Amino acid sequence: MRWLRLYARSRQIFLSLPAMVISGIAVAIPSWSGEQHSPDARSLVLALSAGIAVASTGLGGQDVRLDRTGSLPWAWIRAVHALGIGMAAVTVLLALQVTTETTTLLVIGRAACGLAGLAAIGAAVFGAAFAWAVPFAWCAVAYFVPPSGDRTVEIAAWMFQPADAAPSTWMSAALLVTGLVTYATAGPRPSVLAR
Amino acid sequence: MLLTLGFLYLISGPWEKGPTMWTAQWTSMALWTRFLLVFLWPLAVGFGALQGMRDHRSGMTELLATTSRPPLSRAVRTAGASALTLTAAFACPVLLGAIHVHTSDGHWHTGWLPLSLVGALSLVAGSVFGMGMGKVAPSALTPPLLAAAALMGTLTMQQAQDPMAGERIVPLRFALLSPANGPVRDVLTTFSASVHAGQVIWLAGLGTTGVALLVAARRRARLAAVSSALAAGVIALAVLPPTSSRTYVVDTVMAAPQCNGRVCVTRAHSSRLPDLVGPAYQALRIMRERLGDQAPLTMNESTVQPAPGTVRPRSRTTLFLYFDDWSVTHARGTDLVRSLIASGLAPTCLSPEDGSRRKIREIAAQSVAVAWATGELKPLPGTLWSRDEAMALAQPVWETLHSRPEQEQRSKIDAMRRAAFSCQGDPLGALAKGGQP
Image 1 (cartoon, each protein chain N blue to C red):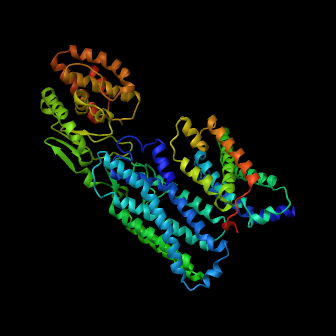
Image 2 (cartoon, chains in turn yellow, blue):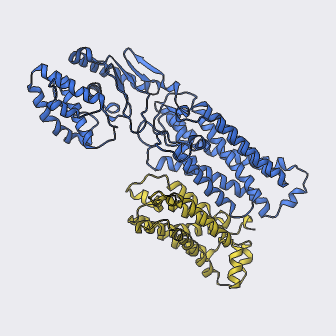
Protein backbone atom coordinates (compact mmCIF):
# COMPACT_ATOMS: atom_id res chain seq x y z
CA MET A 1 0.00 0.00 0.00
CA ARG A 2 2.87 2.30 0.74
CA TRP A 3 4.20 1.89 -2.71
CA LEU A 4 0.79 2.66 -4.16
CA ARG A 5 0.49 5.81 -2.11
CA LEU A 6 3.89 7.04 -3.16
CA TYR A 7 3.18 6.24 -6.78
CA ALA A 8 -0.11 8.09 -6.64
CA ARG A 9 1.55 11.11 -5.12
CA SER A 10 4.32 11.22 -7.68
CA ARG A 11 1.87 10.90 -10.53
CA GLN A 12 -0.37 13.60 -9.12
CA ILE A 13 -3.37 11.34 -8.95
CA PHE A 14 -4.57 13.08 -5.80
CA LEU A 15 -4.58 16.35 -7.68
CA SER A 16 -6.19 15.14 -10.87
CA LEU A 17 -9.15 13.49 -9.21
CA PRO A 18 -10.59 16.77 -7.89
CA ALA A 19 -10.00 18.29 -11.33
CA MET A 20 -12.07 15.50 -12.88
CA VAL A 21 -14.80 16.07 -10.32
CA ILE A 22 -14.84 19.79 -11.05
CA SER A 23 -15.18 19.28 -14.78
CA GLY A 24 -17.98 16.80 -14.19
CA ILE A 25 -19.77 19.23 -11.92
CA ALA A 26 -19.39 22.03 -14.45
CA VAL A 27 -21.22 19.97 -17.03
CA ALA A 28 -23.83 18.67 -14.61
CA ILE A 29 -24.81 22.03 -13.15
CA PRO A 30 -27.59 22.75 -15.65
CA SER A 31 -29.30 19.49 -14.81
CA TRP A 32 -29.06 20.06 -11.07
CA SER A 33 -30.36 23.59 -11.14
CA GLY A 34 -33.86 22.40 -11.72
CA GLU A 35 -34.14 22.16 -15.47
CA GLN A 36 -35.50 18.79 -16.30
CA HIS A 37 -33.27 17.83 -19.16
CA SER A 38 -30.07 15.95 -18.43
CA PRO A 39 -26.88 17.11 -20.15
CA ASP A 40 -26.58 15.67 -23.60
CA ALA A 41 -23.94 13.16 -24.54
CA ARG A 42 -21.80 15.70 -26.36
CA SER A 43 -21.10 17.90 -23.36
CA LEU A 44 -20.55 14.83 -21.22
CA VAL A 45 -17.94 13.52 -23.62
CA LEU A 46 -16.29 16.92 -23.61
CA ALA A 47 -16.17 16.91 -19.80
CA LEU A 48 -14.79 13.38 -19.97
CA SER A 49 -12.05 14.48 -22.32
CA ALA A 50 -11.12 17.35 -20.01
CA GLY A 51 -10.88 14.96 -17.07
CA ILE A 52 -8.82 12.42 -18.98
CA ALA A 53 -6.56 15.15 -20.30
CA VAL A 54 -5.86 16.41 -16.80
CA ALA A 55 -5.17 12.92 -15.49
CA SER A 56 -2.93 12.05 -18.42
CA THR A 57 -0.24 14.40 -17.18
CA GLY A 58 0.48 11.72 -14.60
CA LEU A 59 1.36 9.13 -17.20
CA GLY A 60 5.02 9.95 -16.73
CA GLY A 61 6.80 10.57 -13.47
CA GLN A 62 9.28 13.20 -12.46
CA ASP A 63 12.21 11.26 -13.86
CA VAL A 64 11.26 8.80 -16.52
CA ARG A 65 14.71 7.40 -17.07
CA LEU A 66 15.20 6.77 -13.37
CA ASP A 67 11.84 5.03 -13.14
CA ARG A 68 12.88 2.59 -15.83
CA THR A 69 15.85 1.40 -13.86
CA GLY A 70 13.60 0.03 -11.13
CA SER A 71 12.98 -3.69 -11.28
CA LEU A 72 9.21 -3.48 -11.31
CA PRO A 73 6.87 -4.94 -13.95
CA TRP A 74 6.51 -1.56 -15.64
CA ALA A 75 4.54 -2.82 -18.63
CA TRP A 76 1.71 -4.02 -16.37
CA ILE A 77 1.84 -0.94 -14.20
CA ARG A 78 1.59 1.38 -17.18
CA ALA A 79 -1.26 -0.56 -18.75
CA VAL A 80 -3.21 -0.54 -15.50
CA HIS A 81 -2.56 3.17 -15.06
CA ALA A 82 -3.80 4.06 -18.53
CA LEU A 83 -6.91 1.90 -18.13
CA GLY A 84 -7.42 3.32 -14.66
CA ILE A 85 -7.55 6.84 -16.04
CA GLY A 86 -10.43 5.94 -18.32
CA MET A 87 -12.31 4.06 -15.62
CA ALA A 88 -11.85 6.80 -13.04
CA ALA A 89 -13.21 9.41 -15.42
CA VAL A 90 -16.32 7.33 -16.10
CA THR A 91 -16.78 6.56 -12.41
CA VAL A 92 -16.62 10.22 -11.49
CA LEU A 93 -19.31 11.05 -14.03
CA LEU A 94 -21.49 8.19 -12.84
CA ALA A 95 -21.04 9.17 -9.22
CA LEU A 96 -22.27 12.66 -10.06
CA GLN A 97 -25.39 11.01 -11.49
CA VAL A 98 -25.32 13.05 -14.63
CA THR A 99 -27.46 10.72 -16.63
CA THR A 100 -29.42 7.50 -16.44
CA GLU A 101 -30.05 6.74 -20.10
CA THR A 102 -28.35 3.59 -21.33
CA THR A 103 -27.41 5.02 -24.71
CA THR A 104 -25.67 7.99 -23.15
CA LEU A 105 -23.83 5.65 -20.79
CA LEU A 106 -22.68 3.56 -23.73
CA VAL A 107 -21.44 6.64 -25.54
CA ILE A 108 -19.55 7.80 -22.45
CA GLY A 109 -18.03 4.37 -21.93
CA ARG A 110 -16.88 4.13 -25.52
CA ALA A 111 -15.45 7.63 -25.41
CA ALA A 112 -13.57 6.90 -22.19
CA CYS A 113 -11.94 3.80 -23.67
CA GLY A 114 -10.81 5.55 -26.82
CA LEU A 115 -9.69 8.73 -25.09
CA ALA A 116 -7.64 6.80 -22.53
CA GLY A 117 -5.97 5.02 -25.44
CA LEU A 118 -5.33 8.36 -27.13
CA ALA A 119 -3.81 9.77 -23.96
CA ALA A 120 -1.54 6.74 -23.73
CA ILE A 121 -0.46 7.23 -27.35
CA GLY A 122 0.20 10.88 -26.61
CA ALA A 123 2.34 10.00 -23.63
CA ALA A 124 4.33 7.43 -25.58
CA VAL A 125 4.93 9.68 -28.56
CA PHE A 126 5.20 13.15 -27.08
CA GLY A 127 5.94 12.68 -23.42
CA ALA A 128 3.67 12.90 -20.41
CA ALA A 129 3.61 16.70 -20.23
CA PHE A 130 2.16 16.94 -23.75
CA ALA A 131 -0.05 13.89 -23.57
CA TRP A 132 -3.11 15.94 -22.72
CA ALA A 133 -3.06 17.72 -26.06
CA VAL A 134 -3.89 14.68 -28.19
CA PRO A 135 -7.29 13.64 -26.76
CA PHE A 136 -8.20 17.22 -25.94
CA ALA A 137 -7.50 18.62 -29.39
CA TRP A 138 -9.24 15.76 -31.16
CA CYS A 139 -12.32 16.18 -28.98
CA ALA A 140 -12.39 19.94 -29.32
CA VAL A 141 -12.24 19.81 -33.10
CA ALA A 142 -14.66 16.87 -33.44
CA TYR A 143 -17.22 18.67 -31.31
CA PHE A 144 -17.90 21.03 -34.18
CA VAL A 145 -18.25 18.47 -36.91
CA PRO A 146 -21.94 18.44 -37.82
CA PRO A 147 -23.47 15.03 -37.30
CA SER A 148 -24.19 12.99 -40.38
CA GLY A 149 -24.34 9.34 -41.18
CA ASP A 150 -21.29 9.55 -43.35
CA ARG A 151 -18.73 6.90 -42.52
CA THR A 152 -15.83 9.34 -42.63
CA VAL A 153 -17.57 11.48 -40.07
CA GLU A 154 -18.26 8.45 -37.92
CA ILE A 155 -14.60 7.62 -37.81
CA ALA A 156 -13.23 11.13 -37.57
CA ALA A 157 -15.62 12.33 -34.88
CA TRP A 158 -16.01 8.94 -33.30
CA MET A 159 -16.52 10.15 -29.78
CA PHE A 160 -19.69 12.09 -30.51
CA GLN A 161 -21.56 9.61 -32.65
CA PRO A 162 -24.67 7.79 -31.42
CA ALA A 163 -24.21 4.54 -29.56
CA ASP A 164 -25.09 2.30 -32.48
CA ALA A 165 -22.50 3.65 -34.93
CA ALA A 166 -20.28 0.63 -35.49
CA PRO A 167 -17.27 2.38 -37.09
CA SER A 168 -17.02 4.65 -34.08
CA THR A 169 -16.93 1.72 -31.68
CA TRP A 170 -14.26 0.02 -33.75
CA MET A 171 -12.25 3.23 -33.81
CA SER A 172 -12.46 3.56 -30.06
CA ALA A 173 -11.41 -0.07 -29.53
CA ALA A 174 -8.55 0.32 -31.98
CA LEU A 175 -7.31 3.43 -30.21
CA LEU A 176 -7.53 1.74 -26.83
CA VAL A 177 -5.58 -1.32 -27.92
CA THR A 178 -2.94 0.67 -29.80
CA GLY A 179 -2.54 3.06 -26.92
CA LEU A 180 -2.22 0.41 -24.27
CA VAL A 181 0.24 -1.66 -26.26
CA THR A 182 2.43 1.28 -27.27
CA TYR A 183 2.46 2.88 -23.88
CA ALA A 184 2.99 -0.36 -21.96
CA THR A 185 5.91 -1.49 -24.09
CA ALA A 186 7.63 1.78 -24.93
CA GLY A 187 6.74 3.84 -21.93
CA PRO A 188 6.44 7.61 -21.79
CA ARG A 189 8.92 9.62 -23.77
CA PRO A 190 11.46 11.36 -21.55
CA SER A 191 11.32 15.12 -21.93
CA VAL A 192 12.76 18.06 -20.08
CA LEU A 193 9.32 19.18 -18.96
CA ALA A 194 8.81 16.03 -16.97
CA ARG A 195 12.11 16.63 -15.27
CA MET B 1 -2.86 25.52 -38.73
CA LEU B 2 -3.26 21.95 -39.94
CA LEU B 3 -6.32 21.60 -37.79
CA THR B 4 -7.85 24.74 -39.25
CA LEU B 5 -7.19 23.84 -42.85
CA GLY B 6 -8.29 20.26 -42.44
CA PHE B 7 -11.46 21.42 -40.79
CA LEU B 8 -12.39 23.98 -43.41
CA TYR B 9 -11.66 21.78 -46.37
CA LEU B 10 -12.56 18.30 -45.32
CA ILE B 11 -15.56 18.62 -43.10
CA SER B 12 -18.77 19.68 -44.67
CA GLY B 13 -20.90 21.99 -42.70
CA PRO B 14 -22.58 25.37 -43.03
CA TRP B 15 -19.28 26.96 -43.93
CA GLU B 16 -19.01 24.99 -47.12
CA LYS B 17 -22.34 25.61 -48.72
CA GLY B 18 -24.60 28.37 -49.70
CA PRO B 19 -24.02 32.07 -49.97
CA THR B 20 -22.39 32.30 -46.55
CA MET B 21 -19.59 29.87 -47.31
CA TRP B 22 -16.16 30.85 -46.18
CA THR B 23 -14.79 31.40 -49.64
CA ALA B 24 -17.71 33.46 -50.84
CA GLN B 25 -16.93 36.88 -49.49
CA TRP B 26 -14.16 38.53 -47.54
CA THR B 27 -16.24 39.14 -44.45
CA SER B 28 -17.59 35.64 -44.23
CA MET B 29 -14.09 34.27 -44.77
CA ALA B 30 -12.75 36.35 -41.91
CA LEU B 31 -15.66 35.42 -39.67
CA TRP B 32 -15.43 31.68 -40.34
CA THR B 33 -11.70 31.62 -39.64
CA ARG B 34 -12.44 33.36 -36.38
CA PHE B 35 -15.19 30.86 -35.63
CA LEU B 36 -12.47 28.24 -35.51
CA LEU B 37 -10.76 30.13 -32.74
CA VAL B 38 -13.19 28.37 -30.47
CA PHE B 39 -10.85 25.41 -30.29
CA LEU B 40 -7.66 27.09 -31.45
CA TRP B 41 -7.59 29.65 -28.68
CA PRO B 42 -7.73 27.15 -25.80
CA LEU B 43 -4.97 25.17 -27.48
CA ALA B 44 -2.88 28.33 -27.78
CA VAL B 45 -3.41 29.06 -24.09
CA GLY B 46 -2.51 25.49 -23.12
CA PHE B 47 0.65 25.40 -25.16
CA GLY B 48 1.59 28.80 -23.84
CA ALA B 49 1.32 27.39 -20.33
CA LEU B 50 3.63 24.56 -21.35
CA GLN B 51 6.10 27.10 -22.64
CA GLY B 52 5.94 29.13 -19.44
CA MET B 53 6.60 26.10 -17.35
CA ARG B 54 9.88 25.25 -18.99
CA ASP B 55 12.18 27.30 -16.82
CA HIS B 56 10.84 25.96 -13.59
CA ARG B 57 10.52 22.35 -14.67
CA SER B 58 14.04 22.19 -15.91
CA GLY B 59 15.31 23.80 -12.73
CA MET B 60 16.83 26.76 -14.51
CA THR B 61 15.22 29.67 -12.69
CA GLU B 62 18.05 30.37 -10.33
CA LEU B 63 20.64 29.96 -13.00
CA LEU B 64 18.84 32.33 -15.32
CA ALA B 65 18.38 34.85 -12.52
CA THR B 66 22.13 35.20 -12.21
CA THR B 67 22.52 36.30 -15.80
CA SER B 68 22.77 39.98 -16.54
CA ARG B 69 19.98 40.09 -19.09
CA PRO B 70 16.88 41.57 -17.50
CA PRO B 71 13.92 39.19 -17.22
CA LEU B 72 11.75 41.49 -19.31
CA SER B 73 13.89 41.06 -22.37
CA ARG B 74 13.93 37.31 -21.91
CA ALA B 75 10.19 37.21 -21.54
CA VAL B 76 9.68 39.40 -24.58
CA ARG B 77 11.89 37.16 -26.66
CA THR B 78 9.99 34.01 -25.84
CA ALA B 79 6.65 35.72 -26.15
CA GLY B 80 7.71 37.32 -29.42
CA ALA B 81 8.80 34.02 -30.92
CA SER B 82 5.52 32.31 -30.16
CA ALA B 83 3.63 35.41 -31.30
CA LEU B 84 5.29 35.26 -34.69
CA THR B 85 4.62 31.56 -35.06
CA LEU B 86 0.98 31.85 -34.10
CA THR B 87 0.36 34.82 -36.36
CA ALA B 88 1.93 32.99 -39.27
CA ALA B 89 -0.14 29.91 -38.51
CA PHE B 90 -3.36 31.92 -38.38
CA ALA B 91 -2.45 33.84 -41.51
CA CYS B 92 -2.16 30.67 -43.60
CA PRO B 93 -5.85 29.72 -43.73
CA VAL B 94 -6.75 33.40 -44.06
CA LEU B 95 -4.45 33.72 -47.06
CA LEU B 96 -5.83 30.58 -48.64
CA GLY B 97 -9.35 31.85 -48.15
CA ALA B 98 -8.29 35.19 -49.58
CA ILE B 99 -7.03 33.52 -52.74
CA HIS B 100 -10.32 31.65 -53.10
CA VAL B 101 -12.42 34.75 -52.61
CA HIS B 102 -10.27 36.75 -54.99
CA THR B 103 -10.59 34.23 -57.78
CA SER B 104 -14.33 33.88 -57.31
CA ASP B 105 -16.59 36.88 -57.52
CA GLY B 106 -16.01 38.38 -54.10
CA HIS B 107 -16.15 42.13 -53.92
CA TRP B 108 -12.98 43.61 -52.43
CA HIS B 109 -13.18 45.88 -49.43
CA THR B 110 -11.06 46.37 -46.36
CA GLY B 111 -13.77 45.89 -43.79
CA TRP B 112 -12.72 42.36 -43.01
CA LEU B 113 -9.15 43.22 -42.02
CA PRO B 114 -9.98 44.21 -38.42
CA LEU B 115 -11.70 40.84 -37.97
CA SER B 116 -8.64 38.82 -38.91
CA LEU B 117 -6.22 41.13 -37.13
CA VAL B 118 -8.16 40.85 -33.89
CA GLY B 119 -8.21 37.10 -34.40
CA ALA B 120 -4.43 36.96 -34.70
CA LEU B 121 -4.06 39.27 -31.70
CA SER B 122 -6.27 36.98 -29.65
CA LEU B 123 -4.06 33.98 -30.35
CA VAL B 124 -0.95 35.92 -29.38
CA ALA B 125 -2.51 37.37 -26.24
CA GLY B 126 -3.89 33.98 -25.25
CA SER B 127 -0.57 32.23 -25.55
CA VAL B 128 1.31 34.97 -23.68
CA PHE B 129 -1.28 34.84 -20.94
CA GLY B 130 -0.86 31.08 -20.81
CA MET B 131 2.88 31.55 -20.48
CA GLY B 132 2.38 33.86 -17.55
CA MET B 133 0.05 31.40 -15.84
CA GLY B 134 2.52 28.61 -16.51
CA LYS B 135 5.25 30.56 -14.81
CA VAL B 136 3.05 31.32 -11.83
CA ALA B 137 1.81 27.76 -11.37
CA PRO B 138 4.38 25.41 -12.88
CA SER B 139 2.53 22.22 -12.03
CA ALA B 140 2.06 19.70 -14.82
CA LEU B 141 -1.67 19.99 -14.36
CA THR B 142 -1.76 23.66 -15.34
CA PRO B 143 -1.77 23.36 -19.16
CA PRO B 144 -4.67 20.91 -19.44
CA LEU B 145 -6.68 22.70 -16.75
CA LEU B 146 -6.17 26.07 -18.42
CA ALA B 147 -6.99 24.65 -21.84
CA ALA B 148 -10.13 22.91 -20.58
CA ALA B 149 -11.32 26.03 -18.77
CA ALA B 150 -10.63 28.16 -21.86
CA LEU B 151 -12.55 25.71 -24.04
CA MET B 152 -15.57 25.82 -21.78
CA GLY B 153 -15.37 29.59 -21.84
CA THR B 154 -15.19 29.91 -25.61
CA LEU B 155 -17.95 27.32 -26.09
CA THR B 156 -20.49 29.02 -23.85
CA MET B 157 -19.62 32.43 -25.18
CA GLN B 158 -19.81 31.28 -28.75
CA GLN B 159 -23.36 30.11 -28.30
CA ALA B 160 -24.22 33.55 -26.98
CA GLN B 161 -22.47 35.27 -29.89
CA ASP B 162 -24.74 33.72 -32.51
CA PRO B 163 -26.66 36.58 -34.12
CA MET B 164 -29.71 34.33 -34.36
CA ALA B 165 -29.60 33.11 -30.79
CA GLY B 166 -32.95 33.19 -29.10
CA GLU B 167 -31.97 32.97 -25.48
CA ARG B 168 -28.44 33.64 -24.38
CA ILE B 169 -26.79 31.93 -21.42
CA VAL B 170 -24.43 34.82 -20.80
CA PRO B 171 -25.12 38.44 -21.65
CA LEU B 172 -23.88 39.42 -25.08
CA ARG B 173 -21.48 41.95 -23.65
CA PHE B 174 -19.56 39.29 -21.71
CA ALA B 175 -19.71 36.87 -24.56
CA LEU B 176 -17.98 39.34 -26.86
CA LEU B 177 -14.87 39.03 -24.71
CA SER B 178 -14.24 35.70 -26.38
CA PRO B 179 -12.59 35.96 -29.79
CA ALA B 180 -14.56 33.10 -31.31
CA ASN B 181 -17.75 34.31 -32.92
CA GLY B 182 -20.88 32.40 -33.73
CA PRO B 183 -21.66 30.83 -37.10
CA VAL B 184 -22.03 33.17 -40.06
CA ARG B 185 -25.68 33.60 -40.89
CA ASP B 186 -25.56 35.96 -43.82
CA VAL B 187 -23.00 37.73 -45.92
CA LEU B 188 -23.93 41.27 -45.06
CA THR B 189 -23.63 41.23 -41.27
CA THR B 190 -20.43 42.20 -39.58
CA PHE B 191 -19.24 43.48 -36.23
CA SER B 192 -19.47 47.14 -35.38
CA ALA B 193 -16.39 49.21 -34.61
CA SER B 194 -16.98 49.33 -30.87
CA VAL B 195 -16.80 45.54 -30.78
CA HIS B 196 -13.35 45.64 -32.33
CA ALA B 197 -12.24 48.36 -29.94
CA GLY B 198 -13.49 46.53 -26.87
CA GLN B 199 -11.95 43.24 -27.89
CA VAL B 200 -8.60 44.86 -28.63
CA ILE B 201 -8.56 46.49 -25.19
CA TRP B 202 -9.39 43.23 -23.47
CA LEU B 203 -6.83 41.21 -25.43
CA ALA B 204 -4.13 43.80 -24.91
CA GLY B 205 -4.86 43.62 -21.20
CA LEU B 206 -4.52 39.83 -21.27
CA GLY B 207 -1.23 40.04 -23.10
CA THR B 208 0.16 42.62 -20.75
CA THR B 209 -0.85 40.51 -17.79
CA GLY B 210 0.95 37.56 -19.30
CA VAL B 211 4.15 39.50 -19.82
CA ALA B 212 3.92 41.01 -16.35
CA LEU B 213 3.45 37.57 -14.80
CA LEU B 214 6.45 36.30 -16.70
CA VAL B 215 8.58 39.08 -15.33
CA ALA B 216 7.20 39.42 -11.82
CA ALA B 217 9.26 37.97 -9.03
CA ARG B 218 7.36 38.96 -5.95
CA ARG B 219 3.81 38.28 -5.01
CA ARG B 220 2.87 41.96 -4.98
CA ALA B 221 3.97 42.32 -8.56
CA ARG B 222 1.89 39.29 -9.53
CA LEU B 223 -1.19 40.70 -7.89
CA ALA B 224 -0.61 43.96 -9.73
CA ALA B 225 -0.43 42.02 -12.98
CA VAL B 226 -3.73 40.25 -12.33
CA SER B 227 -5.35 43.53 -11.44
CA SER B 228 -4.27 44.96 -14.78
CA ALA B 229 -6.17 42.16 -16.48
CA LEU B 230 -9.25 42.96 -14.43
CA ALA B 231 -8.95 46.67 -15.22
CA ALA B 232 -8.64 45.95 -18.93
CA GLY B 233 -11.67 43.70 -18.71
CA VAL B 234 -13.77 46.37 -17.05
CA ILE B 235 -12.80 49.02 -19.59
CA ALA B 236 -13.49 46.61 -22.42
CA LEU B 237 -16.91 45.80 -21.04
CA ALA B 238 -17.68 49.48 -20.91
CA VAL B 239 -16.67 49.90 -24.54
CA LEU B 240 -18.41 46.82 -25.90
CA PRO B 241 -21.96 47.38 -27.10
CA PRO B 242 -24.70 45.99 -24.90
CA THR B 243 -27.35 45.03 -27.39
CA SER B 244 -27.42 42.80 -30.40
CA SER B 245 -28.51 45.59 -32.71
CA ARG B 246 -25.41 47.66 -31.93
CA THR B 247 -23.13 44.63 -32.19
CA TYR B 248 -24.13 43.21 -35.53
CA VAL B 249 -24.35 45.88 -38.15
CA VAL B 250 -25.03 45.59 -41.80
CA ASP B 251 -21.80 46.00 -43.66
CA THR B 252 -22.47 49.33 -45.34
CA VAL B 253 -19.88 48.86 -48.04
CA MET B 254 -21.19 45.46 -49.06
CA ALA B 255 -24.83 46.42 -48.77
CA ALA B 256 -24.61 49.49 -50.95
CA PRO B 257 -27.15 49.12 -53.74
CA GLN B 258 -26.04 48.72 -57.29
CA CYS B 259 -28.93 49.51 -59.59
CA ASN B 260 -29.79 49.05 -63.19
CA GLY B 261 -32.91 51.15 -63.49
CA ARG B 262 -35.54 49.56 -61.32
CA VAL B 263 -33.54 46.46 -60.36
CA CYS B 264 -31.14 46.79 -57.43
CA VAL B 265 -28.81 44.31 -55.79
CA THR B 266 -26.24 44.82 -53.06
CA ARG B 267 -22.63 45.32 -53.97
CA ALA B 268 -21.86 41.89 -52.55
CA HIS B 269 -23.84 40.28 -55.35
CA SER B 270 -23.20 42.87 -58.02
CA SER B 271 -21.70 40.22 -60.29
CA ARG B 272 -25.13 38.67 -60.65
CA LEU B 273 -26.78 41.88 -61.84
CA PRO B 274 -26.20 41.37 -65.59
CA ASP B 275 -27.81 37.94 -65.52
CA LEU B 276 -30.66 39.22 -63.43
CA VAL B 277 -31.65 42.33 -65.39
CA GLY B 278 -33.27 40.73 -68.44
CA PRO B 279 -35.47 38.22 -66.62
CA ALA B 280 -36.27 40.83 -63.95
CA TYR B 281 -37.68 43.35 -66.42
CA GLN B 282 -39.59 40.62 -68.18
CA ALA B 283 -41.11 39.47 -64.89
CA LEU B 284 -42.05 43.04 -63.94
CA ARG B 285 -43.66 43.58 -67.34
CA ILE B 286 -45.72 40.38 -67.14
CA MET B 287 -46.90 41.25 -63.65
CA ARG B 288 -47.86 44.75 -64.76
CA GLU B 289 -49.90 43.34 -67.64
CA ARG B 290 -51.77 40.94 -65.38
CA LEU B 291 -52.07 42.90 -62.14
CA GLY B 292 -52.23 46.43 -63.48
CA ASP B 293 -51.75 48.96 -60.74
CA GLN B 294 -51.14 46.41 -58.04
CA ALA B 295 -47.96 45.04 -59.63
CA PRO B 296 -44.62 45.68 -57.91
CA LEU B 297 -42.68 48.55 -59.41
CA THR B 298 -39.10 47.80 -58.37
CA MET B 299 -36.96 44.83 -57.42
CA ASN B 300 -34.49 45.12 -54.56
CA GLU B 301 -32.20 42.71 -52.81
CA SER B 302 -33.12 42.77 -49.18
CA THR B 303 -30.47 43.46 -46.56
CA VAL B 304 -32.66 42.54 -43.63
CA GLN B 305 -32.12 39.16 -42.02
CA PRO B 306 -35.20 38.43 -39.95
CA ALA B 307 -34.84 37.20 -36.38
CA PRO B 308 -35.84 33.58 -35.76
CA GLY B 309 -39.56 33.20 -35.60
CA THR B 310 -40.41 36.24 -37.69
CA VAL B 311 -41.19 36.38 -41.38
CA ARG B 312 -39.29 38.26 -44.00
CA PRO B 313 -40.49 41.76 -44.80
CA ARG B 314 -42.76 42.06 -47.81
CA SER B 315 -44.26 44.91 -49.76
CA ARG B 316 -46.75 45.23 -52.58
CA THR B 317 -44.71 47.84 -54.41
CA THR B 318 -41.29 46.26 -54.15
CA LEU B 319 -40.24 42.74 -54.88
CA PHE B 320 -37.63 41.62 -52.35
CA LEU B 321 -34.93 39.27 -53.54
CA TYR B 322 -33.01 36.86 -51.39
CA PHE B 323 -29.97 35.15 -52.77
CA ASP B 324 -30.14 32.26 -50.34
CA ASP B 325 -33.28 31.13 -52.14
CA TRP B 326 -32.30 28.33 -54.54
CA SER B 327 -35.01 29.19 -57.00
CA VAL B 328 -33.33 32.56 -57.57
CA THR B 329 -29.67 31.64 -57.45
CA HIS B 330 -29.72 28.62 -59.71
CA ALA B 331 -32.36 29.53 -62.26
CA ARG B 332 -31.64 31.12 -65.61
CA GLY B 333 -33.69 32.58 -68.39
CA THR B 334 -37.38 31.75 -68.40
CA ASP B 335 -37.05 29.69 -65.21
CA LEU B 336 -35.75 32.78 -63.44
CA VAL B 337 -38.63 34.84 -64.85
CA ARG B 338 -41.10 32.36 -63.41
CA SER B 339 -39.51 32.25 -59.97
CA LEU B 340 -39.39 36.07 -59.86
CA ILE B 341 -43.09 36.23 -60.76
CA ALA B 342 -43.74 33.72 -57.97
CA SER B 343 -41.98 35.93 -55.42
CA GLY B 344 -43.82 38.95 -56.68
CA LEU B 345 -47.30 37.48 -56.68
CA ALA B 346 -47.07 35.31 -53.57
CA PRO B 347 -43.94 35.91 -51.44
CA THR B 348 -43.10 32.98 -49.26
CA CYS B 349 -43.75 33.09 -45.52
CA LEU B 350 -41.52 30.17 -44.61
CA SER B 351 -37.77 29.73 -44.92
CA PRO B 352 -36.32 28.16 -48.06
CA GLU B 353 -35.21 25.05 -46.21
CA ASP B 354 -38.60 24.32 -44.75
CA GLY B 355 -40.01 21.01 -45.96
CA SER B 356 -43.31 20.95 -44.14
CA ARG B 357 -46.78 20.44 -45.55
CA ARG B 358 -47.50 24.13 -45.33
CA LYS B 359 -44.49 24.93 -47.45
CA ILE B 360 -45.56 22.47 -50.13
CA ARG B 361 -49.00 24.08 -50.25
CA GLU B 362 -47.31 27.45 -50.52
CA ILE B 363 -45.22 26.26 -53.46
CA ALA B 364 -48.35 24.90 -55.11
CA ALA B 365 -50.09 28.25 -54.65
CA GLN B 366 -47.09 30.02 -56.16
CA SER B 367 -47.11 27.64 -59.14
CA VAL B 368 -50.79 28.32 -59.80
CA ALA B 369 -50.19 32.07 -59.52
CA VAL B 370 -47.36 31.88 -62.05
CA ALA B 371 -49.55 29.78 -64.31
CA TRP B 372 -52.26 32.45 -64.13
CA ALA B 373 -49.70 35.10 -65.11
CA THR B 374 -47.96 33.21 -67.90
CA GLY B 375 -50.71 30.96 -69.13
CA GLU B 376 -49.30 27.50 -68.46
CA LEU B 377 -48.61 25.42 -65.40
CA LYS B 378 -44.99 24.33 -65.00
CA PRO B 379 -43.02 23.38 -61.87
CA LEU B 380 -41.10 26.15 -60.18
CA PRO B 381 -37.32 25.87 -60.35
CA GLY B 382 -35.37 24.97 -57.23
CA THR B 383 -38.11 22.90 -55.67
CA LEU B 384 -36.81 19.49 -56.57
CA TRP B 385 -37.74 17.53 -53.51
CA SER B 386 -41.33 18.66 -53.28
CA ARG B 387 -42.00 19.16 -56.96
CA ASP B 388 -44.29 16.16 -57.49
CA GLU B 389 -46.37 16.79 -54.41
CA ALA B 390 -46.70 20.47 -55.17
CA MET B 391 -47.68 19.73 -58.78
CA ALA B 392 -50.25 17.20 -57.64
CA LEU B 393 -51.84 19.83 -55.41
CA ALA B 394 -51.56 22.59 -57.99
CA GLN B 395 -52.98 20.78 -61.02
CA PRO B 396 -56.66 20.52 -59.97
CA VAL B 397 -56.67 24.04 -58.54
CA TRP B 398 -55.26 25.44 -61.77
CA GLU B 399 -57.81 23.62 -63.87
CA THR B 400 -60.67 24.94 -61.80
CA LEU B 401 -59.25 28.45 -61.85
CA HIS B 402 -58.61 28.40 -65.58
CA SER B 403 -62.19 27.50 -66.32
CA ARG B 404 -63.70 30.43 -64.39
CA PRO B 405 -64.38 33.84 -65.92
CA GLU B 406 -61.65 36.47 -65.79
CA GLN B 407 -63.38 38.53 -63.05
CA GLU B 408 -63.57 35.57 -60.73
CA GLN B 409 -60.00 34.54 -61.43
CA ARG B 410 -58.83 38.00 -60.49
CA SER B 411 -60.72 38.03 -57.20
CA LYS B 412 -59.34 34.62 -56.26
CA ILE B 413 -55.81 35.79 -56.99
CA ASP B 414 -56.45 38.85 -54.85
CA ALA B 415 -57.64 36.64 -51.99
CA MET B 416 -54.55 34.50 -52.32
CA ARG B 417 -52.32 37.55 -52.30
CA ARG B 418 -54.00 38.80 -49.15
CA ALA B 419 -53.28 35.45 -47.47
CA ALA B 420 -49.68 35.39 -48.70
CA PHE B 421 -48.86 38.97 -47.75
CA SER B 422 -50.34 38.74 -44.29
CA CYS B 423 -48.98 35.22 -43.72
CA GLN B 424 -52.30 34.19 -42.23
CA GLY B 425 -54.52 31.61 -43.79
CA ASP B 426 -53.78 29.24 -46.60
CA PRO B 427 -52.96 30.73 -50.03
CA LEU B 428 -53.86 27.53 -51.86
CA GLY B 429 -57.20 27.33 -50.07
CA ALA B 430 -57.91 30.94 -50.97
CA LEU B 431 -57.29 30.10 -54.63
CA ALA B 432 -59.55 27.09 -54.51
CA LYS B 433 -62.60 28.62 -52.91
CA GLY B 434 -61.89 32.26 -52.04
CA GLY B 435 -62.93 35.35 -53.90
CA GLN B 436 -66.53 35.55 -52.68
CA PRO B 437 -67.02 39.06 -51.39
